[in-house]
Image (tube, rainbow, N blue to C red):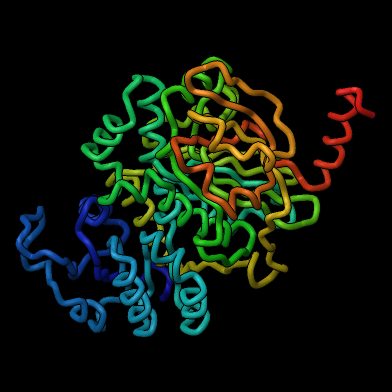
Length: 418
């Protein structure tokens, strides 16, 4: 595509994001981009656009030679992958918002981009309105990227905010998120962390060149967080957030996971409320940088899709520098995490698995402890998600294998054992 070439768009999906994009494009005439056809699943619904715009036949869009951009914002991952594959093979640039599809088909999508030489842009699939992919691609060299942590799911963050600030119970907060259009059509995807780990799979690729299936990244959501956990957090001057994070360890490999975590009130993540997302990137010379913006909803997501469409005028494409021009990083499970664990009964907690336990409160109706576990224990077992057990990482949870030896020795010294 030459610079400023007219973009003729075939749009798949006219839900919250698709309709948002349609409205936004009508207000940005300078873009020289227009939607020629929209493919939808349910023709009977009434829509705020002319009937002639719509079709249920995907081939009308995919094989129209005038259409040079396919924008795909549907929530069926298999159908989305088929659309993307045909579009790229037919010489069309693609903009996608389908995080599940991208996360599950990352190797194939990378291969298609290499084979066709065409752009595939997906800024809206990670943090909606925050331009985090483009920044990771263009600005941060992965040799200097120490860590990246983020609140990537606006729905869970909205629910946690309502539980904390308005003392709503979990179900009421979830219902409100659904009514406001922040939760996925299947709320389990948000609440149990599936949406967040899909986004994290995409961001790990742009941050560190890691190509990994979401099934191989440790995650859980906020489904087990209790009101008592929120009270303990408040007592300790902390918040609870669902945090996705990746950190480079001393051996050069990367620790990565998505788990609930306590955050201190001074942490930028503590300021990220309701449906907002936040990303903190720490690098060698720039120190910490904080990105903040809306992570859910019609127009914020549509704005990221629009930004990608705009970039296509200049034939922008991801170069995947961390993957192709550097030595890609590897994920590692050789580290420990410090956790808070609340539970109803000691018998469900395998105390022998802990390296050490720093604090325990056995008298309260809802018991809890703070201790250190090898990450492998959480990967291999599910006891920490069962029997009303709630696990939340502490504010600075990652302990390198090399540090654990030093800490053990220090704790023995303090205890007067050595």
